[in-house]
Image (cartoon, rainbow, N blue to C red; front, side):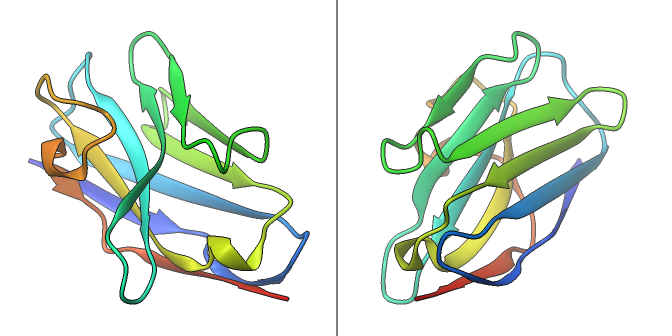
Length: 124
């Protein structure tokens, strides 16, 4: 089992920044993805960013590339999402997720473990 706990959400004005963190505990694997997804009211859960744990390769949704940065700290088993130049359309509940199989980093259905979510609200 893997437990994920997110922190760092909140309310920010457009153009501002927030940093989300996800602390992992329990069983860990050397080759898997950690991802961030978000879900706005009435919308489907969508991919935001992912990092491959061993290679540190990173992947981003087009609309957040150049504004968001995903990183991982191996010793702390923590994955962070630095979000800059936030826009009102970034408003959503953000979820941290871990994939231990061999699926797609893009597809939320391929992730095995999820955090409880943290609200990010960007005012205009």
